[in-house]
Amino acid sequence: MKVRTDMDTFMGLHSPARFRVEPDTARGVTYITLAGFFLLPDVAAFDREWAQAHALLRCAPNAHLTLCDISDMSIQSQDVVNAFTTIVRDPVRQGRRLAMVVGMSLSRHQAKRLNPPEREGVAHFFSRAEAEAWLFSDDRTDAQYLHAPVSPMSADRGYIGPSAA
Image 1 (cartoon, helix red, strand yellow):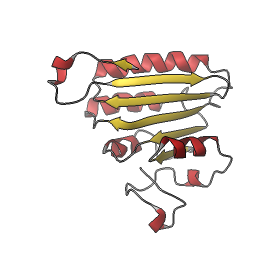
Image 2: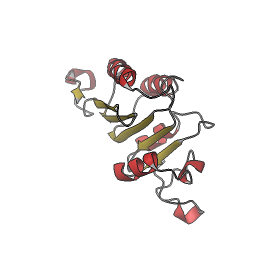
Image 3: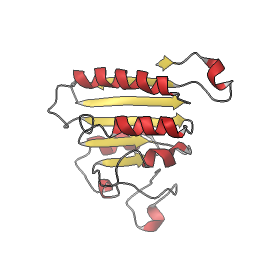
Image 4: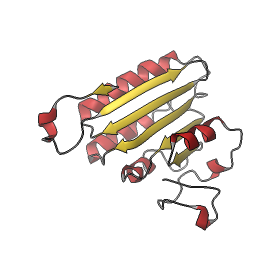
């Protein structure tokens, strides 16, 4: 996992940015873990690493899957959110499905806005196990709730299961 070591930048108020990008070329999936507080140079380093990992995938263009775990990510500055939005909305990186593990962190509110509302195949989850199950499932039921409500549980609103968005 890449870790920023420039602690002076944020005076110890936030944990440093950490990220991991792991392509699974056999399954056509990229596993991404983002944690801590990012600065623009951290986002640029992540962008480069994701681009390198994405280039290793052997599936057809836009046929890949992505699981992104941001459950340990801090709330980010607007500049950083904008930089991540540009990356996530890159048409080359938009695959068949994007499962985001957001846990109970407040960053789930920011994650919800990364993708355009009309993008299909995006869902948010509390746990990696739930996200991975949905990602590889043939069942598209959960995908109809592309940008689920912000409440921790959506079952009481007639949705299929828990939503962490």
